[in-house]
Amino acid sequence: MTKNVVLGIGNILLSDEGVGVRVVEALAAAGGWPEDLELIDGGTCGMEMLDQLEGLDLLVVVDCVRGGRAPGTPVVLRGAAVPVFFRTKLSPHQIGLADVLASLELTGRAPGETVIVGIEPESLALGMELTPAVAARLPELVELTLAELARHGLRPGVPV
Image 1 (tube, rainbow, N blue to C red):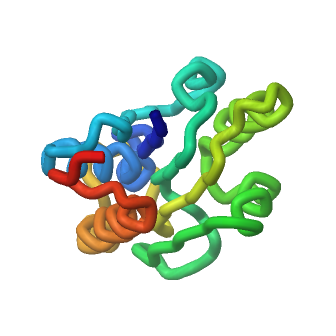
Image 2: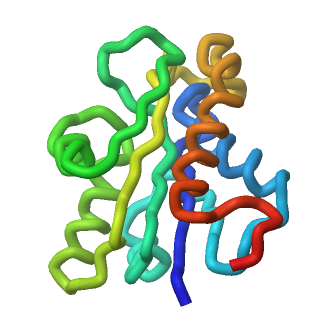
């Protein structure tokens, strides 16, 4: 059986930092996902995620991504761009996640494909709400995540 994960990471106490968690919440609310897809609120994940991410066919990571673009600008990274993402300080969580993925790679249990779906944050200041620039684009970020899943035949209400 294939195994796929959408991992929303971020700290919901730091405004736009929590955008990945908010996307996973929206996907979970939609419901009807096939059994081979797991939606994970990774919070501020670290090595404790090792077991949940081993041997995946697809890992979609949703997070804020600081790349110097206008706040609210979405980005999708796949293929050769993913290792570059982990070599460049673009996300507050990538060190923990990079360590997890490197450990999985060393043991031959890395995901078959990893995709980063992100958005440029406006603020990482203390606050439970997304900034207006990011909140306005949240539906688009959900759609980008859905598109990545659809590329692999994963849709709500579609049994595998």
